[in-house]
Length: 326
Image: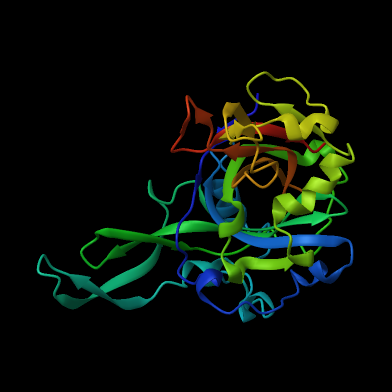
């Protein structure tokens, strides 16, 4: 049975959304002519059964896997990986200075100890760097590395943040496919929501002809490369009638040649895909134990919209269409 997981989006200590992205050895593949769209996505996720973070930390302790200082995508650290051993990982903590604020918002400086502690805050928590991309009409995901988390405390042992422990699961092949299925651990299924036109500019790697994610996939929907379904009914939609699938309608009064009102007509002013503002990307995640690599497959995506009911547009997005990719 697939285990749905919840993604927690947070600010990293260093975030490529707030820094200038530079080309790295992990993202140069986007220059291929076959890549139509690509973007970085920085997430945190908790895999519970199995607990991938615990597996990686245990394997690091036993010196079974290669590790490095934490890597940040789109920065020089991704081109100059500093590999580490168990001792270096454990000793990486140091005393730092952190401003704290009292009830009057007056800053004071206190020392905290950035020591390696994995507890209930950081247990099973992973920092995940993904590159989502469209290649020849197929939506794919590339995970170049993962980073287990640890907990940071002030000098008087008050928790205030999680940090990156070490990076591992280095994958230098964006199109990696496992050879031995028996060595794969199924981690779970994740639904990642993305506002299509709100991806930070610094995280967008490629938009061929200025097309966003859905606009890059839509021509392949129209030529029946993928199947599309109505989420409410579960029925497959005839692609030749896709424009009849109207959710955001506008009514206009109809008049005859002398100005008499003769009725009301419905107009679809926002045909698919232009009324779709949010997508949910469904991912099945796996860990290749032998190769120490993490990868995922994308079986389908959901197209969300704000539905119109009784003439009122809903405040929240909800799934309307399902595009089966595999």
